Structure formats: C-alpha cells, structure tokens
Length: 358
Ligand code: OGA
Ligand code: NI
Image 1 (cartoon, rainbow, N blue to C red):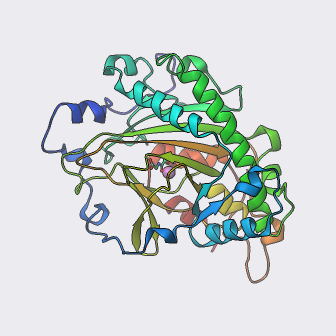
Image 2: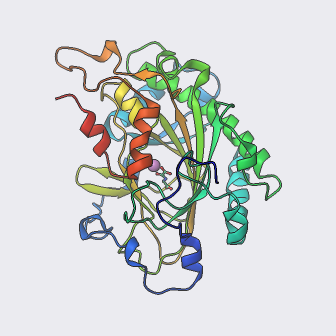
C-alpha cells in the first residue's frame, strides 16, 4: 500500500462487518436525503415484461445478420438502454460456478478479505467506497473489482486465491463474457445502420478493456433509508450483469419512475454505458440505475464491464451527426471520462449531461 499515490480519505468500513454486528439502526453516513430514498420515488406499476428480453440463439450460432434480433436490441437500446438476453451461449454451469465461488470469497473472515483491500489508484481488490470525497454519503454494499483486459493490467496477485478455483473460474467467465460482448457489439452496430464491425473498431479492436465488479449487498436493518448502490450510469461500453434471480434489487430509471428489474432465470441483464451513448450520438441511451437494500435477504451480483481502449479519443460517429441531430459530445478518452465516477462516486447521469454540447 505504501507506494500508492493516494489512498482513501478516511478508514474504509466493510458494510458486511456492520451488518454482521447485528445493528438495528444504520449509521448516519448511509442515510440518503429523502429525495433519493427508495420509497419516496414511488415505483410505477409497469409490468416487468416491459424490460425487453432478447433471444440470442441465432447470434450464438454465429450469425450477426438476424434482422429480428437487431431490431429488438436496437429498440431496447433506444428506449431503455438495457435488455435481458437468453440463449446467450454462456454455459449455465459457469454462471452457477462464478456466483458460488464469489459467494465463498465474501464468506471469508474480514481479515482475509482485507489482505486484498483496494485503493483509489486502480480500484483493484476488495472495497466499499466509490469516490474519494471525504464525508460523502455511503452505500450499503461491498465489492471486489478486478481487471481482465488488457492483459498488461491483469494482476492475478490481486485476485483471491481462495476459493482455490476462483481465479480459474473467473478467467473462463471473463473469456466467455468477452465473446458475448463482441457479438452484442456487432448487433449494436448494425442496429445503428453501420458496418457490423463499427463499434468494435472504435473501441480499439482487439485492444478493448474489460473488468469485473462483484457486488455484495448485506442485509440492511433500514432499507428504506439507504441504497445498496446509488443511482449512476456505467461509464464504459457495455455491462453484462449476472444477478441472483431470487433477490430483486436492481432498478432502472424510466422518466420519473424507478422500475425493478426481475432477472429471468438463466438470463443476463445487459446495459449500455456512456461510451456507447457518446459514439452513437445519443441514439442509444445509457441507463440510469441503482440498487435497493433488503432487510431480509443478502444479494450478490457479478457485473462485467466491456470498455474501449482507455487512451483512444471517442466521439460521436460522423455517420450519426446530421443537421437535425448535431454532434452532442466532444471527443474524450475513457481514462479521462472514468476519473469522474472514480473521484465523485455515483451521481446519476450528471457527467454525461454536463458534457453535452449545447
Ligand atoms: C454496477 C451495478 C447492479 C447490481 O456494478 O455498476 O450497477 O445489480 N450493479 O448490482
Ligand atoms: Ni452500474
């Protein structure tokens, strides 16, 4: 830790250790202002089926030319910024294994997990904070963050060595996620009326970035006052979320309402990140989302992030800039872009909005 440029501004409290301590009242730092609490922003009763479920069977079989798939993905990304996928080609056993191995990791005693404690320099490792502002509001969750690509960023020493199979399972999971995202990128490109390889090329071809964030949300004695994860959009390209289908928690914003996502068994929830909103000149929208805390059930999720090569300048595709639809954003690298959430923590879609050319 000593050689790091900077560290967290205050001691990090593991939420899991707070929850295990058997408190009945949450510390003030976790209490959200009334307008951000779950209950006050009443969930609209839109049936869950409204969140599109896309069958990727044709795509998994090697074809990115299926018009029906392209249309449903494109519509979902224009309207929602997220969709679920079934028949996605990722093995069910691997999905079970990755959840199981990380569940075991979070069961380790705190001292063991703390050996892999992260710092804001790279965020790799076990942590609870997102953002480095002292005194900031805190979320009811812990996480483990690691890099998968580029391989020069991947550091197995920062990955858990317990359970023994954790590294191997996570490696294989990463490989299958990269393949799935590569396929989804083709569909997204076609859905914009562009060449099949367009978005992938803009992301740096084979030199994309990929990372994983395993979220652990312990039980919370006062879930109405806090959030497992505050509202944000994901800064990168695509996010593939594997979530426990028995414990809801993820909500997405649709206009003024928050809608709970109920994952279909065996499905992934895929959402668009800010970089694809930028590249598509806001034809596709990144989705604002948050996670509720629960009084009765702990929850775990595995979020895989597929990102552009960090040092490339990304700007709206020329093909999507017209007189009627002028260029919405200036060019920026993902390294620059990501600093915002890493410094300020989750803050809705304020960053993208602040960058909009008016
Ligand atoms: C994230 C995220 C959602 C969830 O990690 O960025 O939004 O359900 N996770 O845990
Ligand atoms: Ni997110």
